[in-house]
Image 1: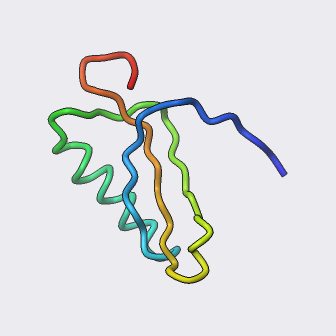
Image 2: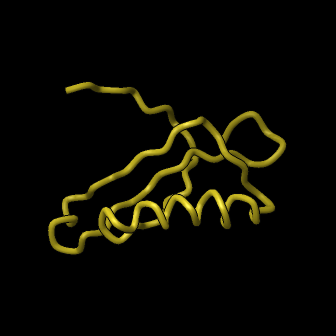
Length: 75
C-alpha cells in the first residue's frame, strides 16, 4: 500500500457511472468543461478517483480534478 498527501485545492468533481464511465468523464472534463470554463483552469497535474461508501449500491465514482481561478496561482 502506498499513501500520498493530497494538497488542499478547489476541485471540479464530475461523477462517473462505474468504471466504464471513467473515460467519458475524463473526456468531458478535458474536452468540454475545462476549455469552456470562463472562471477556472487546471491546477496540479493529477486527478483522483473517489469510491464512496455508497459505491457498491449505486456504482457512482467521483472524479476530482484540481482547479484554480484563471489568472491566479492557487484556489
